[in-house]
Length: 352
Image 1 (cartoon, one colour):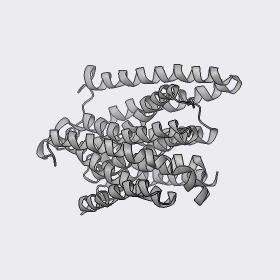
Image 2 (cartoon, rainbow, N blue to C red):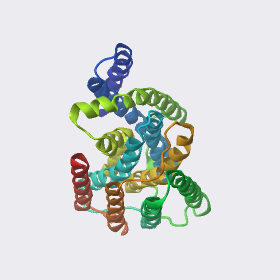
Image 3 (tube, rainbow, N blue to C red):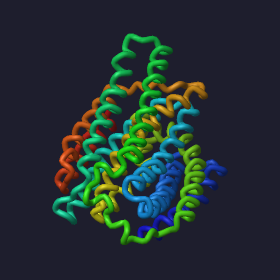
Image 4 (cartoon, rainbow, N blue to C red):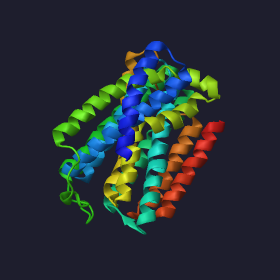
């Protein structure tokens, strides 16, 4: 039923996106059409990565899901940077961290917990990810803000380049650690999660083809979406911060949002947690620093400096996630707690 809905949404949304762009329909209407079209495309990316996850296992499957899910946001952010919307990009990165840690993980734990009283996942992976989260968000994001207070703009950007380089290198080292040197060392009874008994919806070749085509389509729609931000902000009285933190982050990460919740409902918590937390780490340690380097080629450079509300919100999300996930199991109430924190922050950003 859901698959048919997204097929109809895509079949209608993609032609309307093209027609509306050519005929110059109202920005508010096109903003809605573009968002729905991206969500429909993201659903196909999610199904394709789920098929690959069944073949490759939870860790690689979660990494693939996070990577292609974040590809959508990366594409949107590049076009936003090109348009000079640096604040929107920084806000969308903040929104991705909050959305993945509190909205995605929270809803996953809540939905899964309604069906299963107690759900377990790999506690070693959870503790490994906790350290990386603390480093990426609380250390690497806070330090540039603190040191940049008395720095000229040029030196602030140089600091951001240095921090970004360290983040990318450490992220690649973390992948090498988990997938090569220490693969299987910290095994957990639920790591296979029944993948051997499942058949993927699509073959490996078809899944990769769908991912490639969906990514190209997302790139086209995203470029058009970016041009509607200013008009929509004026129409509804939204700030660029709210558009980035809530709207762009939810639309850009729709694929992994849906996938993580579905996996949690099926009690495949290792991959659900890997998607939510792994996606956050990829945003903080790879996507954000890559965007800093990409901004070198545009008129507007993006320093890795967030506002105080963004930093406090991200640090709070990380600390709450670490406390809840460090024991390797969860339930619906913990999920509801995380979702409640997301709602509180969302209200704050809306009124800011």
